[in-house]
Image (tube, rainbow, N blue to C red):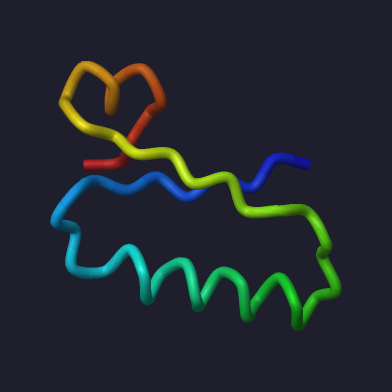
Length: 52
């Protein structure tokens, strides 16, 4: 299973989102690591299907 957190510089919520995701994974005993993917521009966002 791949668990990916997409984020961008200056995002005010990515740290809180990562903490919430981590908490949920622990609650459901999921040991897969969170892969953090920085999305620096729209082209990269399109490539990784970053939600708008």
